[in-house]
Image (cartoon, rainbow, N blue to C red; front, side, top):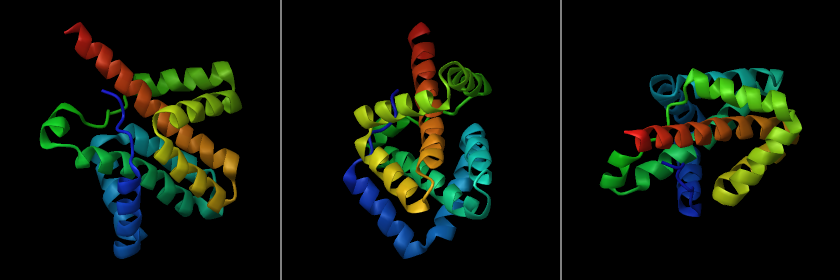
Length: 167
């Protein structure tokens, strides 16, 4: 399975939901979903957001919106497709592999590669990340957080697909 390609409709719907319900309930819902289904991504997002000090809550919200867009796009798929596809649950091994990639490439090169992949495969999601990083005023470090989450999810999706092919 590959990650769902976020559409402009999904991005608009999530934005309207945030405007209508407010960020706090949407954040709580996404944090609960992450806690139940993807604790490694929750840990990555929490540590990344914490590194921003006074704006950590704003960064956490944006990282959760990023994840929420992928989740919302998946939920828009037909019921049969939803049964066949879920967002991958990132394992400790996949997370460690991504960290090894960061160590080997360096943070900037890793981030640029992940952003290039995001640009090629999920332009609407990249647009959301770009807008959020610009709005938060710490473009590079915020984009690193988005890149890390996306790469962990995409690496896990590839690993899951390979494991299915073996069976």
